[in-house]
Length: 340
Ligand SMILES: Nc1nc2c(ncn2[C@@H]2O[C@H](COP(=O)(O)OP(=O)(O)OP(=O)(O)O)[C@@H](O)[C@H]2O)c(=O)[nH]1
Ligand SMILES: [Zn+2]
Image (tube, rainbow, N blue to C red):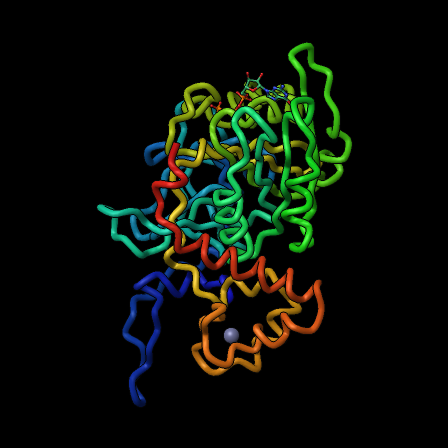
């Protein structure tokens, strides 16, 4: 199902279900539609870094009745909006999200439920080294699933091209119609592929994801040279370097480009993603699957799955169906494969 959801109606206090003829008895909720707004740039132990629409970097806490706030959320603010040292603003409302990058909760958490990692991002930059460490297609596939499911455009970034060729990886991912960019940055700072990468990221909100060691920090430093200083401005508490394994952080430039750095992915549960959610990334297959029996899981062994017939029509169609089914399988793969 579409991931656009109305946060307002998730709030128990505004769930207005008028009974027959009776008026809703829910308490009236203050109208925050005219309240100043901002975007969440960092989250750290109950403190939220927020960049107000007036360009002021604030630290905020959230009102108790707000269910959850993640990086990228658009929020309504009250209290102290001065941004001065030791002042706190208050998040009183979260706007409906355009996109949600999510993982399933792990064992021990309320497993099976989805946890949103970042809201309102446009793109997911999947960072993979061509060598050292070697690429893990299973991990890439899982990131693709999360992107398609969440409504983000995936981009594959192949780093360390000075070490080996990108041909094999490009061949593997060609059927997905992905944007693929190849980069290298050597120790003396000579870089290739950066112009193309900047072009892809400019003006968008992009989440970077990838295993430790693939060169994510090196990329961020190249893309956002004053990353550390910028972060300090937004929220001293979550300054880069002290950014813990559980939090992501956004670097916002003046032209509206967001680079959202996530900590090295250890596991990426996708139990919440249904076969039809994944079709969002495949317009052609989505049309074909409309002919499938109700509840079809679109596997190779699913009876009367329309995708199986479609795969016979051309090599291209076959490659598309095969890629889609590979991603479906990646979604179900055991998590430990993807842990470091
Ligand atoms: N040869 C080569 N080495 C690179 C390249 N990019 C990064 N490296 C090196 O790879 C190592 C890991 O790079 P990082 O940027 O720290 O990787 P990371 O993904 O941020 O890893 P964590 O900080 O552990 O999350 C460093 O020694 C970098 O110098 C590249 O394009 N080519
Ligand atoms: Zn089907």
